[in-house]
Amino acid sequence: MLFVSEEAKAKILAFKASKEQGEDYFVRVSVQGGGCSGLTYKMDFDNVSQDEDQEFEDKGIKLVTDLRSFLYLANTTLQYSGGLNGKGFYFENPNASRTCSCGESFSV
Figure 1 (cartoon, rainbow, N blue to C red):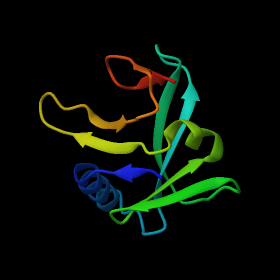
Figure 2: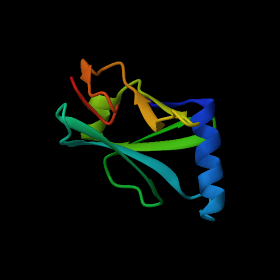
Figure 3: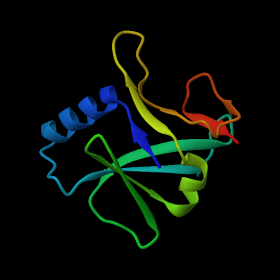
């Protein structure tokens, strides 16, 4: 399962409204090689499902990931932190054994 915090939900809904994206758009989350810790997170809006997508819904937000990425993302929560010292969107990943200081890359 993938989860979304209340703060991230609010920001996603606001962003979708500002970009006039319809209800068929969802948040696609994936993991790619790279970054200072070896793996990086990627997040986009999408409206096209792929054959091996894993789909989850939390707090009314649809989150989709490919099967390979889900192996790294199981039980991860998408968070949002605003303000002057905020990080923007970030991931609370219980599978990560190490993360970089910026929070954009991790290793397992």
